[in-house]
Image 1: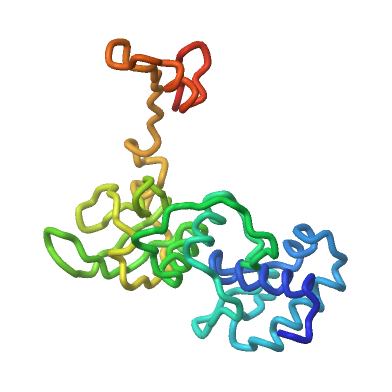
Image 2: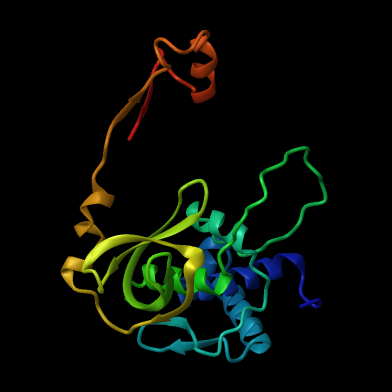
Length: 236
């Protein structure tokens, strides 16, 4: 990769990222994302193909490049940064370290999900496909399950997968780090397995949060903590 410019590495990393986490990439996506011409996007796809010939295959009908079973990322994708990117719809794919050190610290994560597990589940969600997984629970140990995933969520302590569980025939939460294998199933989920049928997930609950009226001596501190307006924080 050393023979490429920084800008071209960014574009190749974008192709790598799109294949890894969505399962596909198109020429028009590269054109739109980087404001390039078609010829430049075609060159980038050729350069990527030359460096990783077994990573993608072109479908003449759909006019897309699809990930292959032999895919191996040619860029390093940090699991923690990737989850943040996916949560914020960022698909640059480039984990470059800046030359400026900022005086900001964040807590070290106690657990970080496996990047390959994240990639397979992301592909399944985006392409609306079921998955066969190996999951380890506290109550029943390790075993195979068929899930229809629709969301990956951070609850502040750890990452979870929200999915329809064909074993229990219900929507449930699964701890991401307890999933050790994912195989995407080439099926179309049933209507009852769709995200819109997950009533607990789709239901919006309005909350009105205020400082405790008796136990807080200086409620202004709490109002500042949460950016309250008129003494209240409204959250859906």
